[in-house]
Structures are given as structure tokens and as C-alpha cells.
Amino acid sequence: MNNKIGSDLKGLFAFHLLATAITGLLGMLYPSFIIRISGLDPNSIPVMQQARGLDDGFAVGAFFALRAETWDQVRVFVAAASAANALSLLGAIYYVIILGVVTTGLVILLVVFTILTAGYLYAWRKYDHVISNVAVKSA
Image 1 (cartoon, rainbow, N blue to C red):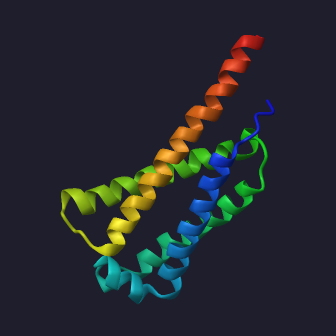
Image 2 (image 1 turned 180 degrees about the horizontal axis):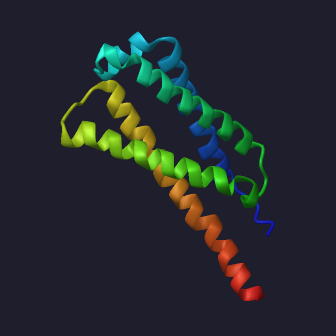
């Protein structure tokens, strides 16, 4: 199918690119800053840097997704981003809401992961649903 993606999804890719590139680069290059605003234990720097490297990988994926024109070109990326952001959102909910660790960094992550998870799940429903309906009607 040749289902064109709209500016809503391209805007989400741009947001994802900026959010993950900024947090990823800061976490890898200036971990002490992230430690300070998140309240994490300084002993967690190596793990945090690895996780931020994953963020940077998703930033590269979002950059390439920005260049795409059809749903088929971004479907796998949207599925992976949905899963990764949903799991990160669960972690942020656990720390901020359940444990009550309310720090600037964790609240920012909670907001970012909420936007990304909701946006990607909405996009999946919107674009994949259209393809499913067309495929059923043409069969």
C-alpha cells in the first residue's frame, strides 16, 4: 500500500529526534549534569550512558523516519519506538508516581515518554488501521 504519512507523524518524528538526541548526548557527554537533575546515584553513570546511547540510536532512526513518505517506510520504526517509549514510560511512572522520586529530570522524562508513547500508538492506530481497511475491502 502507498499510504502517505502526514505532518502529524513527521512532527512526532521531529520531537522524538530532538528529545532523544538532547537527553542522549547530555547523558553520554555530561553525565554529572543528568545525575544532578535526576537524583540518580553517581554509581549508575555507566548504565545511564549505555541507555542514552540507545536514545541516540532512536534519534538517528527518527532522523531517517523524517525522510520517509509512506507508512510502509516507517512502520517497523514506529513499532520499535512505541515499545521502547512505553517501557521507558513505565519506568518513569514507577519512579515519579509510585516511589515519589520527583526530580526535574525524571518529570521531564515522564512528560517526554508520555507524549512519544501516546503519539506513536495514535499513529499506529491511524495509519495501520487505514491499511487494514483497504486490504479487507480490496480482497
